[in-house]
Length: 539
Image 1 (cartoon, helix red, strand yellow):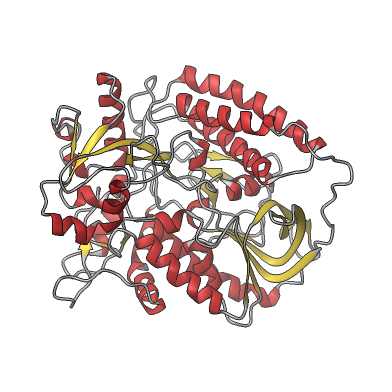
Image 2 (tube, one colour; image 1 turned 120 degrees about the horizontal axis):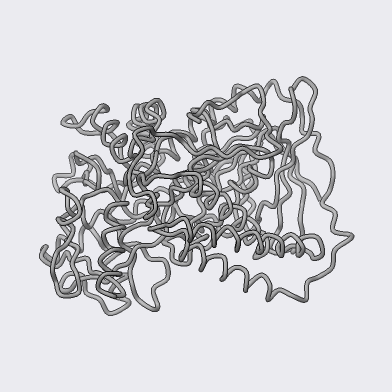
């Protein structure tokens, strides 16, 4: 079975839905997502969206804060482009119906401050901003007549074909696995957009939902697109530590509102690591916690906001308070046990300001992409902003391009005539756990050359097994994600091996100093698909 659309959007988070809703109503758009519409990282984002909305703040200040947090690797043009469009992005969300929290006088929106920011510029909806944003986007998407939503569909691979008038190849669709029908279908499109999020599920401990398996990054790489800075994986400093708590992030806004990080004996420690204390950039805080846990042999540290009034905590952090209470923790009277966990993929598919990749007809936006905004360390609450700004920019570029594009010529149906049902699914589950475990142990918060070499050896063996499975058995949801995770793991390891310094989120005991020259790590696939639009990055 095949489907034919003008635009195929793979991913239904803030980036994907914002782009789909920004296209004209006469454009036929398919949006595919792995599960239900809300099952993505956007839904779980707590903190907020950074934007210049206050008269005491400025675009220059937001830009400089971002550049500083990025440890010399942010692309100034990308930072300025994003920040200059921040207020417009927020206005669009408000028009869409997002219910942002207001000040007590209800005249203005309440702005909070998070790590790395010199001003209060984080607009939020209590402590469930992602949920509020995604709910409004979903409601609008369900009401849009030109959007066709395919839930429980997982993209397998992109299709690229030679096309008249183009130098080499262009993307003309994708093969998509229908999880309910257990069948792979052909989706044809003039333009394909990757908005699949990041790859933090490659680590054993993560704040991300299960679907964050780097699908878009892996597919784009296999299709011949460059990726950059994959070694910069942000570990959120504060995820709830509890045997029954799965992937629950404790928002950075708690520290923005005065929460203290403490050792098990109640001693504060962040002043020993950075002048900003608890408001230091995330990489500093994560490494500090990791250091103290290893020094003391402790399972966790503690985040304490109990010195604030109970009504203040209830008003600003109802989601955190409710979730912690489910595990017997009253955050208004006791500290929260926390540990770092993989949170955000700062690298990704190389794109320009319009989200265009190296392959004609293929765009990438949101956490899947590498825009140059985040550098070596993403500043808090810039990610949702990037999603909206680049979604709008890509939508404008696609709208202008669509009238000149031919109908997709992708015509080959998925062929599984030579494969059988697997009787060895244990291989998938075993490899899944092994992959995530050695990535945590060898390619985590603190790295060494020897650990990376071990990871290199392990990933080669795993990929050989995965490829043998692919050649003989019918694919499944777990297999597709494992294949993509292994590909992304290789890219992370290769990138980390190339960076012989410590910078931002990449910290190496063998190379503890920061090089005076800041360079991106750009990986180029053998089947590099450079087209008319060549994306420029610093090699």
